[in-house]
Length: 419
Image 1: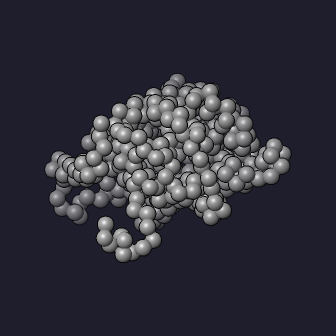
Image 2: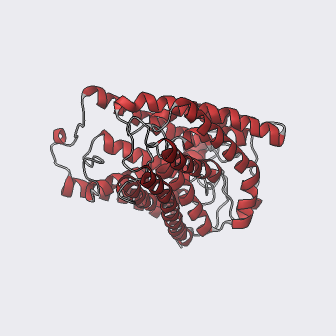
Image 3: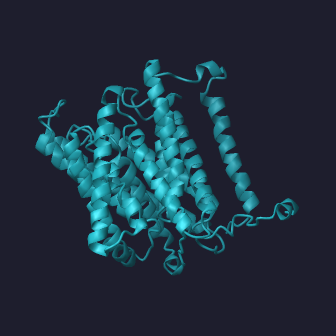
């Protein structure tokens, strides 16, 4: 079993260094002025820069969204950073060593399009670790990111370019490609690990830690259009912003109503997640619909997500025998399904009357719902295989949901200096 932290740290550094060396020797030109490829005018590049920074900001805020367990805060932040690092690097490496896209679909040279794809891959994996957060060792988040990037690239290729009935799925903002992939990859890892002891671990919270969750949820809500509109052209960007915010407002209202009707008071760890269900679900039909229909999508998604947190979470975890620590399935999995199903219905209802009508609305609808099923299967199986690898390399048992295993915990600078 692997349990030597120094060897593991050295292996992680060497793996990153090896990827950089291979890139220099086999792919990248030595002249730095030729490394970057610009795709578009200055205004378009500026918009992409804004999106890149926005998604990175969102990725870091996801860490605060998961900081609610007392004495398990630093570990969450480190897990997010290690997860983002490995998945980002491997995604970029895959696209350079194996450019599986036609450039008309997706840019494979070093540029903001590739960087944006990589950070979306990274935030998808960061969402996924919420399922098994605190039940594996820190270096295993890095290991999982390597495997996840491979699975995500397969999902990305399927969603963006694989044709069913001579057409591709409609998933403009990633309800299927991002959120369903994250939820079911994480659930697959959890099913393989089978850490049943997690049910018995205390997850005490403090007012301070839950306030971090509130802050993260509200900031993520504001930033969501930069993520969901990441690959929209500039002339559609404002429309995507409008429908995203309308869907978000819908889930803000409906999640509150469900909490009050079902539990008489608001559980902040239910509400702060379920209020994001609208922005998750709107990803698939993002530019297909208008603002008022987007509001309805958000209302439905907020209801579904809040009900899942209150009623489905205990039953599903009990049946599967594993704990979804952050309730990722209730938000990203179920809101992803909600977005895919509603998108399929909306294509059939209004697909012929939109500004850019589909050649065959029925085929587009079938392709969209079929792709949701395919992504569900690929992500779950890929996560299960990754979980088996994690289980085989986990080594001796660790204290779950605690920072004590990985960090020096002292408030005395003199004691730190002596270590």
